[in-house]
Picture 1 (cartoon, one colour):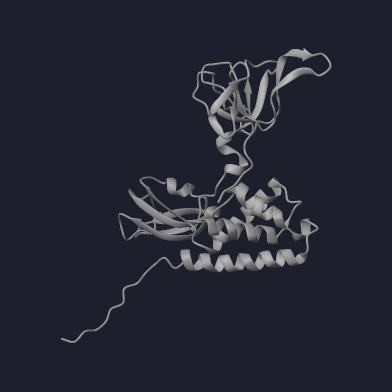
Picture 2 (spheres, one colour; picture 1 turned 60 degrees about the vertical axis):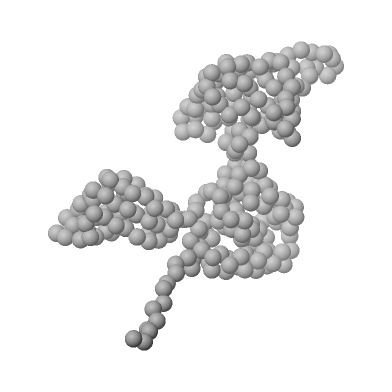
Length: 280
């Protein structure tokens, strides 16, 4: 289920719940579930020592490690996997296969804010170098943007009201590749749009990518995982809201019911063959 759908369900029990608060508690709940339920299994092959970069904080359990030599042994030293040969000397295997149960960390996030300027520059305020994500107008960028501030016309049609608003906060706009023109899209059919002429009085636009809006995000797991995380998250919210403790108690009970189902579904995936004696 999408994060927006789960938020709508949670908000029925907690009307004061904000998107940012729900995102934080949902991530916390999803991590806790992944520590008890085998939700995500990663299997990678290595031909060098890059396995040492596996974040141990994101590993619940190492399930299997194989190398080209069965005599090699492995250990976790200083939060990194290392190998030893039969003489107990450090060794880097020529081929290594590692399968581990992954801890799901910070799967959901509030969408990143970008700025598109009239000269075609696109920057990300949250990038490590403070706006290093740069593209020209000719670059193939995501065409559908969700405005975080209104798009204002440079033409004053009414001296009392000032410039017209070409598009409002939350509107979806499109800037075709290689053009300075801006178009406002029909939210029910993005292929239908009307021209908002040029940049008007705006030297920049702050926006989200439509493909990465908070409401459209999904954790990639089955619906019952999302519902379990939602109930677990809401059970933790009582101390931050004015809701009745009974609401949290109900959420906690439902979370445990879903957690039990998930353990049965994901933690019992192995099967065994039973051998029966037969008469000759």
